[in-house]
Image (cartoon, rainbow, N blue to C red; front, side):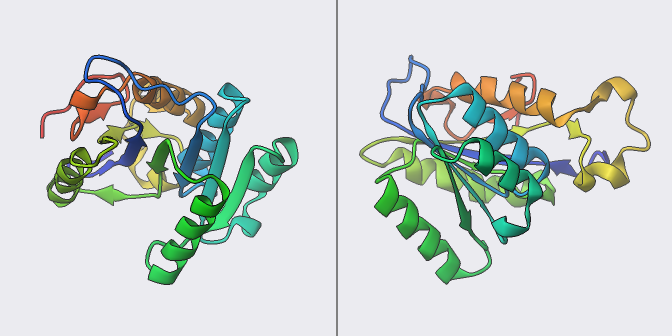
Length: 203
């Protein structure tokens, strides 16, 4: 992957907790945006498999066109909800938010796994502003950025040529590592940027 570009996964986690305790969302409600394929689809799969008492909301522009989501829906009919969501259309955002609110009343975890190749300078002001605003909520919301490494997906194909074999990760490996970070995030991690191995990335 070119050094000036990197895949970013934005993870938003909501739950009241202390700065010294890690977040746990067992039996909670998780939402994955950009869930039709790649890392997003793998997040949905692993969240469903690791938390049999929880619920997962999977969103993308056209869920009906995703074979992977259809297969997961067949297997996890009661715990998986599919919703159309186009982040470029305000009415689509409002409709999905209303559906989640009416069905579950809240979210414990929001993962934006939409395919983004972006320079950190563009994401930094947006993410840090969000982190500051979320920290002011009555029930604190923690916002972190996660770098999944170079993952073998369609999005990364143009950048794989010069990536050493041991540095090209499978979706399964990368998402497992990222969920481990999310499982242990604390309120004082708000606004931080972490690599797939848990190391904080200065920015």
